[in-house]
Length: 297
Image 1 (cartoon, helix red, strand yellow):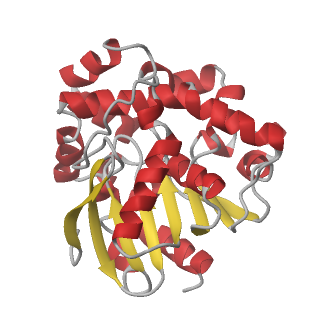
Image 2: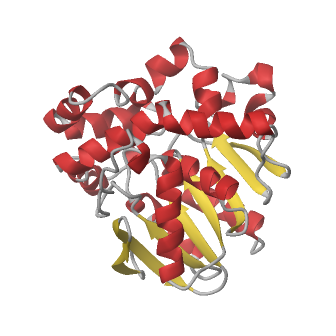
């Protein structure tokens, strides 16, 4: 990313690749699938004058290492484990408390971190997600057909790994072009970078393990929280695509805000013009909303 220092930060679970720039209060940016930290290429420089911005490749994604298997099913790629690794990453960069903005899979890591480590997360923004438990509890044909990675990548190995390895470009192009954002949002170099990140067999397996964790252990972590009434304490900003599934699928629950109010005490947010990848489609608007929420409007 232009103007950012890029480096690896070593943790107990392997190296995490980070981009860092700016000054002020620390802000951690987390990407989704099939992206890497490159998704913040436009937003990061817009936020750096106001914050110390740290954009990472999630563990198992991009240039970050794959966590070692721990012999406990899919736990090594659970959102709880990933959150712990990223807290260590930020601590090694000198940030014990920080705000987070996460899109897609990154949003799931971010809200798990806020639930498990209320003393660490100061503010939280989740972009185009609802909690994992809610996704599965409300799943229907719309989800299965529109957001196929939820079910396909959670299938037992090695089927999804073999499918991704056989055609990483097709995986990237389908996701980027079919989830509501215009194809021209993504230059060829960006598409190629995302596809390149889906060519390493170890990382393909880690990504599939992350989806398997979402279908199993992450659901159980969420279920335990909702059943015991544990909620996110810090202020929560919820942004979702005006042209995506979240805008219409959950009207009976009060939409995304209605769902998130079951999980957090202080919730605000609204739809953003664009498709699922609205942070890349409309970076200026997204950066402005994040600045306003984080206190630097």
